[in-house]
Image 1 (cartoon, one colour):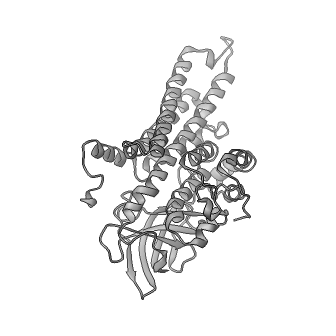
Image 2: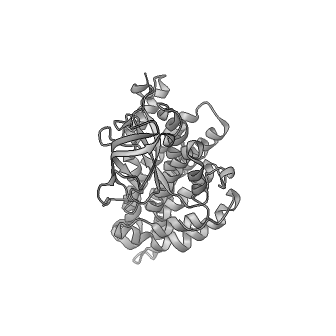
Length: 385
């Protein structure tokens, strides 16, 4: 990464606008068309101090909060979903690295010299990230051997480190977390990502075969990885996923607005916006987006104030935002008609990106189950009984 330009959370907006408009926006279509990792955008975010937004000031970071990060991810998602997802996963990883990681990595992240990501989902358990099948075994007194088949890792082969889950080394519990350097011997990225949406986010399987890491790479206590994930990683990931979906939703509605205002029915000498049926259809979609924004704002307030319903709000936020984004995307495609199928309008790209959140762990179906469990007084995970 390039040199760090120090910013505080109150000044993130100005620096971010420059990155968004001068680097991310001009390359967004190319990133989607070619499927290449948005390296220029990530470097620009690093230069502007955005990689260290959630890093603590004692490590040289901005000391921003989840609301700051949500603003950044939302705006990025509306312009380039791939870049937004890379930053989202980095922020989720930073929540645990900044708390439990080594000092040099914390400092590097804060200074924009280190990109991290999550490596939790596995081939054997798919989106059930809490049921790790990867193993950690002692090699000697100082090192541990990791073996696993991770299914989808954002920024695979591009990040500098992975927040990696495994079964506990020796303790009870269901999971331990490790910080694994991307250059570790035995790590293999299996193939380039060629997906339907988020085409530049480099989401590929990563296999670990006899990867040796120091015992000091353990993030938190052995066997307490699920507790760490639930208290640090998951709230950040779910809230920022909701912000991501909201950003895509807002971009779709803006494109629809432009199309309705600029497309004319010549025989009536009116724009589509002057027709009652398109207006009503647009209004329904706008209402859905506004409901998500209100819900996300309330979720952030619940987290910041320690409200009793914060946990369930976090679970609900991603489900609501993901389903809304998909529904709005479908509605905008219908509303804009054949023009929406042309790449140059920009609807088609956002339509594809809007569907990702539904299937990213925890999926919408899993979140519905968690919310049902919480509402009925049951434990979230069967494995924790």
